[in-house]
Image 1 (cartoon, rainbow, N blue to C red):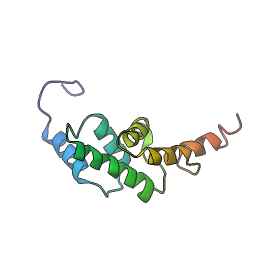
Image 2 (cartoon, rainbow, N blue to C red):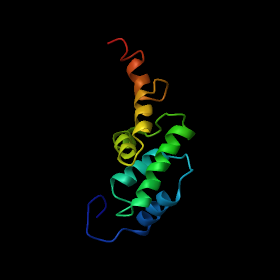
Image 3 (cartoon, rainbow, N blue to C red):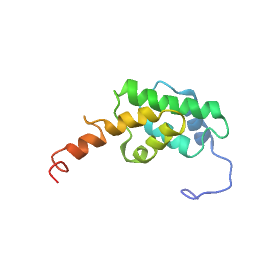
Image 4 (cartoon, one colour):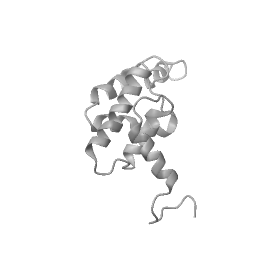
Length: 117
């Protein structure tokens, strides 16, 4: 049944997606969310080097590709900071938190809707 957890082996689509995460360090399409969620669900398993590669890709995308901005949308927002902080990229996480230009949390807080409160 779709949408329910089972004890079945992952489908080829799932393993292909996970393989894509582990092999991809330069794409800018959904990388922050894809990699943050992949790390959260344990896509790297016990492979410490693979987990580090995923976190390095998140940091690269956020800092180099997006100039210290998030591109996570709703799904990745919750998991990107813990993902970065878990493997030595705490400073990158702080740069995202302290960013004040769009798109960022700081810009939302300082913006006309919340800044007037």
